[in-house]
Image (tube, rainbow, N blue to C red; front, side, top):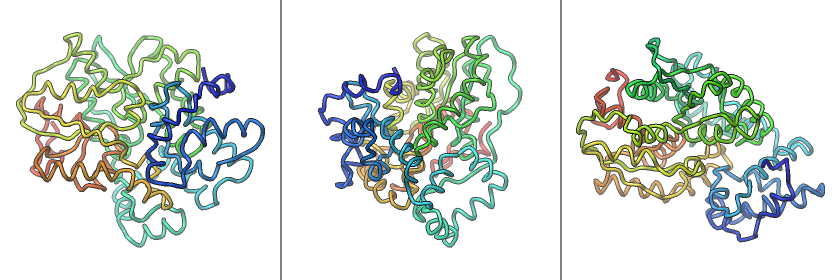
Length: 416
């Protein structure tokens, strides 16, 4: 049931337990933020009567969905807050012009990526230049201290696949497509190694950046465009794989948008690989690699309710030790931590995680950190100074497809 289909019934499901507020990472560090219960179901009752309340404070919601993970009644709190933001923006002008332009741009990560990768070298020089960063902060409200990720040549699939009886569709997402194409290539290689032909249609952004910046209706329209591209593969029963947890969460919500989407079989990469393992179809021709890793589970992975399949799978590799850090949200939440009025809130949210990572690395408990979320990787590196990569790179090393450099970073020149 969607929120629009039966608002009253969904609102009545809220039992006023305040568990969502108790677990909200923003409320924990910002005493002025009233929390998801007040800004969601409580305020929604007033909004249904035509009274727009709490819209200014609602902009501090990070859309991490911890409230929805926590809620015992399954109330779509984040969706209520996002709809309130969108309605306020349309009816009252919402945020300042400066922040509106910035959020409009951040919501369109696909178009920013296309523009930035025309000349990625120049883009990266500008993003590192203090003067340019100060200009971005003064004109658009993009924090000069925030860890804006570097851009690289757009992700493309490698050589043409040999036809296989087993096929998967790969949804790379904007971060892989424009910021981390090597991880996309690694995911394709691992899937091929396990006997699958990998199909990569010309997908659009999953819609999460639009939703996170208050453009829910546009996010849904983008999702419908992706569903149109997926239609022939859904009819053929071909599974859809993504290595990005935010994209994965968005894809799981697609079935509510169209009747045909009920046939969508969307999987996180490691969820899919673990199912292969349970059917004795996963290749375990591993080398002993002797590495210790700290693992961070992103909020959007937790919201999918699939546990931590990457941890289970990597522990099958001889010599691999994985420590689940279990320190909550990193704070970045898409573009949330890039915004000048939210940067310090994001850093405070992530502080327990950063401290845990630094402590674990200093005590030689682990050598580096792994997490499926590209944004979390960027934020953990920024907040802790410790190298953080996608867990698929551990599989790549175990399969013998590349070697780690002494610094722990993966090297494109050694990807074979």
